[in-house]
Length: 439
Ligand SMILES: Nc1ncnc2c1ncn2[C@@H]1O[C@H](COP(=O)(O)OP(=O)(O)O)[C@@H](O)[C@H]1O
Ligand SMILES: Nc1nc2c(ncn2[C@@H]2O[C@H](COP(=O)(O)O)[C@@H](O)[C@H]2O)c(=O)[nH]1
Image 1 (cartoon, rainbow, N blue to C red):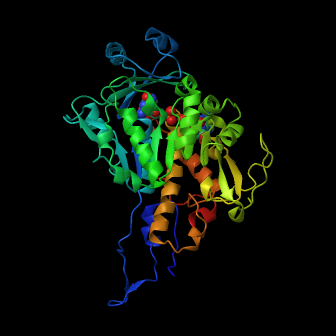
Image 2: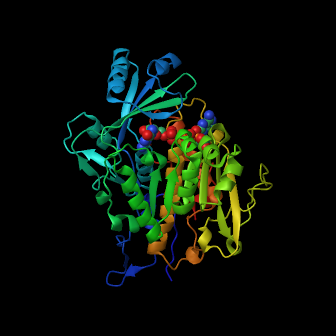
Image 3: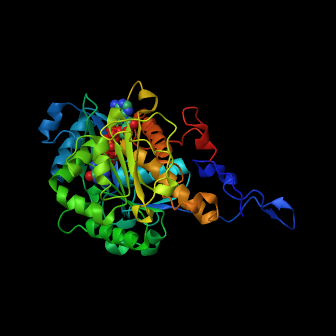
């Protein structure tokens, strides 16, 4: 049997992933470059560059923008808006964005590993233009080779921040919704550790093909048993068609990520823990961020694999809800006697003293969860006979640990302007348990 000591998170510790006692018989040396199978995740997005600016309420009214919403604007409004921002020197920065683009980038930075981003990209790129900016602000670990070339611009997302820190998104779509179903490579999806999508991909106009492309990828993932991860994006989209989204989630999604407003939009429930619990009727794992209240997660474990927490029991909308938070979450279909498990993590260190802005904090939490999920697939691919895999779990770590990790990553984003991490986390931190680093 292989013996392995694995440090988590991080492929950077790759020497810990392979059996250190396996020596090459000829040299009697440890083979330091074993060929390991690699796991990766795939995300689909509308390829966007964020243009961030500080504005006041009057500005939003002038351009008929609804505060807090992500809305699509015409070329004419875009032109006027951009000119105003330029004339008044209100632009803070222009940086690659997109909710799934950010998640793939952050995943690749955290895991130091490959993710694949699907979407469109301008085939003629000039130094300094938006397409160039998107590519040059994206981690080199994000595989952009599968992007579909288009004859025209990618999108722009005006990220308008008011005095309260609230973000209003105005999207100039360019050709972002022209991804074709033919551009979805079925074997790429069916060999992935997860397929990651957002509700924004269904906000399309007549003649757009993004929704069909997304549905093709989802069907392919469902067929291959690859977990489908959906992030709800914005509550306004969900509120428009809650019934559609409930059905879509129930029929196709395994992991649902949302904030408390989106959770309310899809379930009708204000309490994030109760809303997460309600979503377990449709999906296997739920991540619900709740701003200053931190992060809630909910999932399933089979009775025989449940592990009781060593933390004090917490009660909220559900009594003693964190009782089995030390369990590793499983797909409901893999549980003979399913037990619902929940956890809550308060903002890391109480939250930063000075929040730059919360843009992308939720996406970053999701990237951390994906890192743990993919690490589990990676470990199983390479050390299938590890006792770790006697339990058919979805993740490498317990619900409690994943939640802490996710929350820690959100903290990092709150301390910077960009929704994209510029570096991974420190390799060891006192605030995360010893067991977390030495699994
Ligand atoms: N005001 C805040 N104070 C402390 N932590 C915060 C605050 N806002 C967000 N966070 C942290 O960032 C995470 C994600 O934030 P949230 O605003 O819920 O995400 P989203 O970007 O999806 O709306 C939270 O779970 C929490 O850890
Ligand atoms: N693909 C799309 N991404 C969008 C859209 N509107 C906004 N955004 C992106 O969201 C992040 C911020 O994420 P959040 O977790 O803080 O909500 C930002 O970088 C935007 O680019 C959209 O319509 N489609």
